Image (cartoon, rainbow, N blue to C red):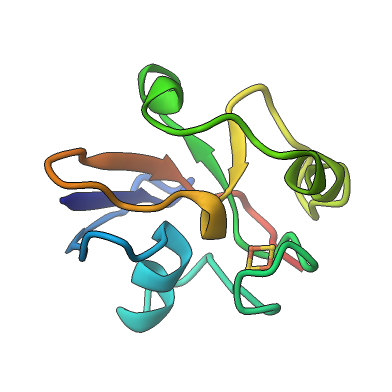
Length: 105
Ligand code: FES
């Protein structure tokens, strides 16, 4: 699946992701600036915050309670389509479009 990373300045990076990887891992491995992933994906940092395309929210399981809690601690205020990208796992044939917040830390 392809992952489209949009910076708030309009720049876009498209990465061919691997099924089973998270969006956060895909970003970190490919040097996408704007996603930090400090805790390595265990829901204790909120530095992997993204805004997921609204029409793709239904492609993923709802946020678990720990993710909801961490979304209250993001450096850039959460919005309705905020997710932590370490919880967005790539599936076969499901492309993902995320916009990166201004700040992660
Ligand atoms: Fe830390 Fe996602 S990488 S919460």
